[in-house]
Length: 147
Image 1 (cartoon, one colour):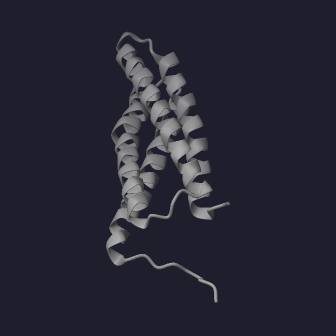
Image 2 (spheres, helix red, strand yellow; image 1 turned 60 degrees about the vertical axis):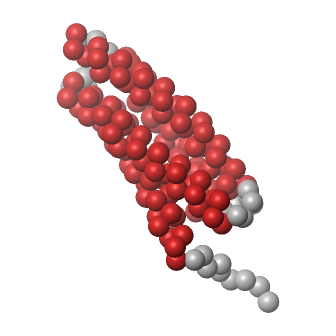
């Protein structure tokens, strides 16, 4: 007899929703930031929108995703399969890249007042695109559970 599906207790559903919801908020905030920064064409308002969506949407989404991930992993006690390793790798590296993007973007937004700063925001856009690639790989690993 084989197990077709494993059912988790109902009280864990909130934690899993916190993890998945946070991940989707993180992806959406990063996608919005990268899109706004890519298509701003020098418009300061749209450049600021891109940076602020990274700061006010993606960063809280990362925090929610990470809290949910840690709580669900400790509750399930499944060890550490390969797909969880991919999730940890992407989460740890993306935390560093997200922090760098926020610092560089903050400098760029501050320098927009004097008509400069677009180079910093272009760097933020490039980092955001790299983050999107990593998040896509993590979503694939979490949903497909390879290995």
